[in-house]
Image (cartoon, rainbow, N blue to C red; front, side):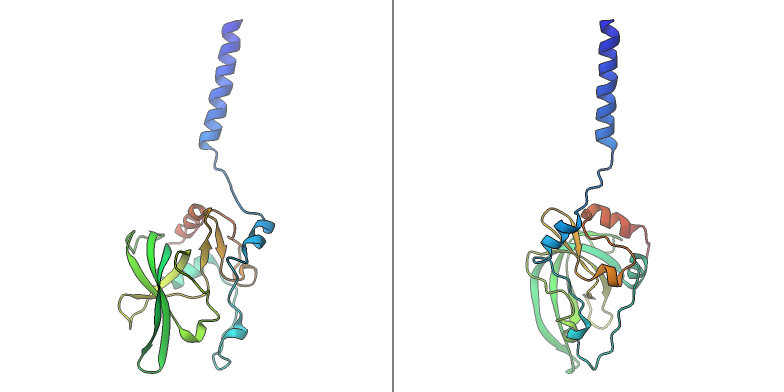
Length: 195
């Protein structure tokens, strides 16, 4: 009888260990936790902050469509702010140097530093980033400015705890909300959509 009891206890312990080992923990921030973080990770994309001569509209899109517009999505850390500079004497750009931790589609090597840029006309529309911030950003190689990548408002901040928070209004601009999930889960979502 003692052997049966010990065997049963052993089976239960092994089953619990297997469940704990292989169960995927779906860790996600709730709406209150996300709202609390919005002071540190604000939403951008207010079309009223764009030059009125530039026509811009908000069109609901999908992560798949964002993937198709970009060359890749990179997860990295802002290491430097790039000063405003001019191209062709009429277009002004600003940007950031970004150290790449991961590239969802393996186009940019881990540890490489890239420069992400945007036209200054969108400086108040796009997220304001600072050195040390971690982000996931869709980038497209700028064909006229070698070694630089364009970015826009459709990026995600990565919190100190490894959760992603959109830098734009997901409810208005995206068909699904990813804010509050872990970075690894988000990168796996992006990988579902090959370029």
